Length: 411
Image 1 (cartoon, rainbow, N blue to C red):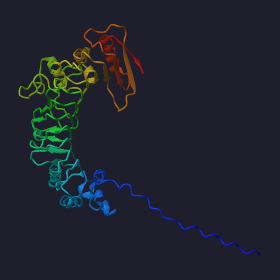
Image 2: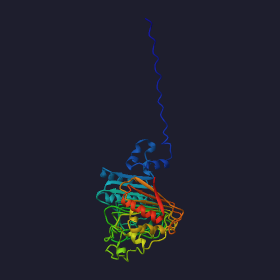
Image 3: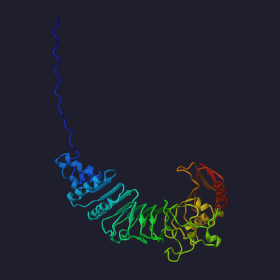
Image 4: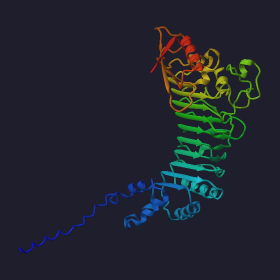
């Protein structure tokens, strides 16, 4: 029997360690990368290597996120604020789950720490049965550029933005505002959704440099529509007067008549001389916009009241309206705003939508070269979006065809 051949031994494996490209980055870049992590995760990177031991102390941002163990988060933040270097911050994001009474003092402390560290972007989001009540102290920062607030109770001193000359973006969602005036010369982007204004009168919004505006009165807490002062630089505005809007005509009927048409003003529709609204509440302030979206539930009298003093929309090119503008006899509100929009190019009507998707899309075109002399000669696109062509839709389309000399086709 021939002798067995000896097997050749396998070559020894050579362990090659991949180069640590991340650790090779400069400190400034690693500080920026760590700012995207929750603060707990950012601190835990100190065990990776000697190189990472102290990087967390100088991150350019803080993401304070607490959903479960709030007591642990409060203790953690107490030590972090003591040990962290006093370097400037770009962003501070505080997002808590169910907000409780014990969180009040701590969140106010973290907020003031953010301002002290020259944060450029500050986010405060809480949820639960309680709102975050901020200390009634002035907000003073020459560095703050954006402020994002959710479910926050805002006292008068905090929302006085005279001490924030660089503030450009402000978002307020489900906040309670105890102030008669919101004023900022630097503000360019403003979003107010579902907020409650608790002084019983119209809040005046003065932001002459505003470029974009979102105003949505939604929710279940009644509040009066804010009065908008002139915004000469405005480009885009989206306004929705929903359930949260307390400006309801008590004499409104199914024919689309408000108190002004019946000469019997209800208690809500009676003009209030000291409400700061002058001739118009909304339309006068946003008349310089290029793109407008104006929607309202029935019975809300603000737009109907403003139309009596309808301004001229000299820059308006695209306009989106809902069925509110088509419910009055003869489409009077719709035709009024069209006659005051001399350069309008596109009109979109979203009528009686039940869901999020538009099932039907009708596009209008002029029957001939002639069009009503009072309507913009630039108006080339008229769209109707709806769920089904029911009787209400059919009546609106028929009136549009007669008033604008157009015909519709399905797309």
